[in-house]
Length: 269
Ligand SMILES: *[C@@H]1O[C@H](CO)[C@@H](O)[C@H](O)[C@H]1NC(C)=O
Ligand SMILES: *[C@@H]1O[C@H](CO)[C@@H](O)[C@H](O)[C@H]1NC(C)=O
Ligand SMILES: *[C@@H]1O[C@H](CO)[C@@H](O)[C@H](O)[C@H]1NC(C)=O
Ligand SMILES: *[C@@H]1O[C@H](CO)[C@@H](O)[C@H](O)[C@H]1NC(C)=O
Ligand SMILES: *[C@@H]1O[C@H](CO)[C@@H](O)[C@H](O)[C@H]1NC(C)=O
Ligand SMILES: *[C@@H]1O[C@H](CO)[C@@H](O)[C@H](O)[C@H]1NC(C)=O
Ligand SMILES: [Zn+2]
Image (cartoon, rainbow, N blue to C red; front, side, top):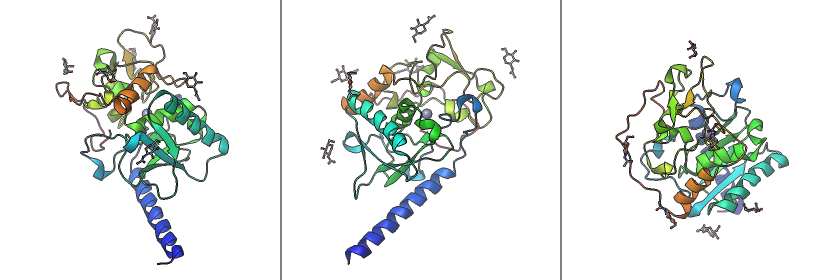
């Protein structure tokens, strides 16, 4: 086979893979119109690919998350993403790099103005999708929020022990968004305690349908809830436990009840 033919076949294969991935994701109807939150992080967890269920964990091979920008990013926007990578590399053993020729298993980062979103963990497919709309690129912590999803973490309030710290007011949550408040009864919390100041947390009004709180801290302390100014030490600690020390406990606590939601058909974490 000639080199040109080979390259054409490869290009078509990559195109098909990306189209398939994009189609799979856009079937998901996620909310990005909440003006309160400027549309940058709510509902930002994309569903798994149908083939993705049942894998024991979602760590990136060789602790390395690889990504490629779609063509619409400006240099300044790319720099914000790289800033997140530098902080993660500085504080954890996770490595973060742009793809090189023939890489597979990477994140294709889109720039659509529909908010920020990511799948949770490595999907072990050729490409997986992250979206970083312009609002997500104002601050590298927002980018890191999505990268931390991609590394395999859900939100702070999805922690199995969150009921010890917050009350979820399901009666105030907009229809169809209850799944964003489910507890994840699995090992990915790495037993780092709930941290209200986590960059992976929500503020008290996210997905409110009536202006009342959806998340209420039990101790009445709202400090840092939903902040996106810095990556919390607890966020770094979780990443290190999962990737660097491999000492996340794998025990699943099934004694806590799962919450009832109106979007039970989508598999989220
Ligand atoms: C794993 O990552 C290290 C450090 O980034 C790199 O030097 C090495 O080539 C990688 N190994 C594989 C098999 O990709
Ligand atoms: C890495 O982190 C240390 C300590 O937090 C900091 O002093 C240093 O400037 C950081 N380096 C880079 C390249 O971010
Ligand atoms: C919001 O909360 C206030 C105070 O708890 C309550 O009086 C009000 O009825 C609530 N509004 C709605 C729409 O539930
Ligand atoms: C609220 O919590 C923060 C830590 O998250 C703490 O520094 C602060 O002192 C607390 N405020 C009150 C009033 O307890
Ligand atoms: C996790 O591993 C690190 C490094 O081996 C160790 O210092 C730490 O105590 C471990 N934590 C737990 C809870 O096992
Ligand atoms: C499981 O959750 C229940 C209820 O929150 C708690 O009492 C129990 O200690 C937990 N078990 C483990 C092993 O974490
Ligand atoms: Zn998120």
